Image 1 (cartoon, one colour):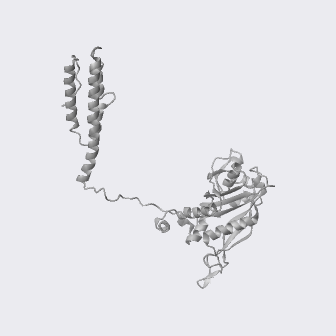
Image 2 (cartoon, rainbow, N blue to C red):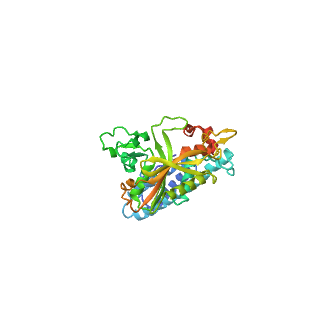
Image 3 (tube, rainbow, N blue to C red):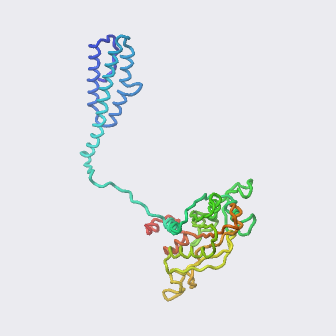
Length: 371
């Protein structure tokens, strides 16, 4: 029978002892019926809930209702009852928890000495793996890593990089603009960054020379997807600004990086090019890693370098002095170089992939080869 708290008319010691004994007997009877932790929680709430528990009811029905002269004795008995309730219920919880585990072990024959089921760890995506390799090469040269937002303003993506408004070089970027920006000034309009060069501007704004950073990240251009183009791809760009930096420093740095990525036998060559934010500018080629720079292999023309013996890989140049004006650098005291390379292009060479779309299709059969 479920225990209910009786109201007291007699507050003598004998009556109190009798009522406490009845309470303990009822408590023990209920405790003995508990067989799981869920049942224990019900028991705990019934006896120890703050407002409706039996312990709170005892306090109201016995202690507060007692006359002033009897309150000290009633208080001692109520406190004794509280300790007994807590002792029985807390002790029962430990038993219930152990009993549940024991039942599982006996009922389902669980062998706790067996190793658990481990979720297999994945592998780096080949693009991320290649990006990390490139960044690692420059970190070993003392470069730090900087990142920036993929949604940029026209100012950081173009203007501060020496692309003035209406400059024809902007057309080569195939920019994707955010809609409904016409009401804003041109320099504040939002777009998806077309290169990671804006990170270089943001870095120079917050740091004074010397600066040596690499800027890896995702970029977006309005390119139709095919075997060699994707509207989303990745770049790693670098920047070094200090006193007395020359084009020789640029050539030595990139020659070392290419050898670190493709092997010590790789050669590099530079030939003139154009980028609005560097002057002079150059494209960098490496000797073909498939034919050893000969232009021929397997008795025929090398298809990778088109029999030229060279593969174009990245662009670079000395930072145009105009760029320093946007970041409050003194072009008379500092000089620097910048470079940028497409991660997909390097991954294609390193892993012999013939279609850039394979990197983005999510085909597990392709990706698990790089695990």
